[in-house]
Amino acid sequence: QVTLQESGGGLVQAGGSLRLSCAASGFLFSTYVMSWFRQAPGKEREFVAGCLWRGGSTSYAESVKGRFTVSKENAKNLVYLQMDNLKPEDTAVYYCAATALGWVGEKKYEYPYWGQGIQVTVSS
Image 1 (cartoon, rainbow, N blue to C red):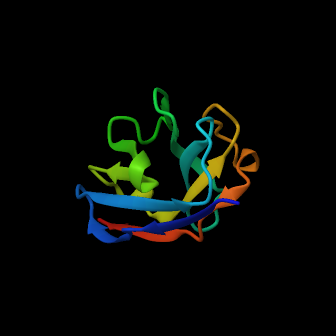
Image 2 (image 1 turned 135 degrees about the vertical axis):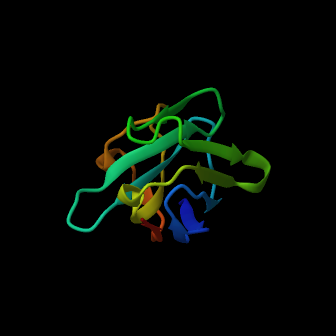
Image 3 (image 1 turned 60 degrees about the vertical axis):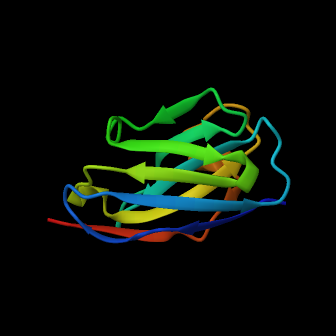
């Protein structure tokens, strides 16, 4: 069983930066995928970025490419989402998710493990 806990959210002005952290507990196989999703009010939960736990592959939504970076610290069981040049449309609850899929899927149903979510608000 994998449990996930996000931290690092908050309020930031447009153009600013935030770094989200996801602490994972439980056994993580090398084929595990760690991803970030987000859900804005009245919208569907959408894929943001993801990476393989063993490294070597990352994927980003078009809307965040060049602004967001996903990384991990295997020794500490931590996954990060560095968010730069934030825009008001990035405002959402951000979720950390994990799956044993073996590749970075972008569909929420592919992920059985979820954190509780953390609010990110970008003011204009």
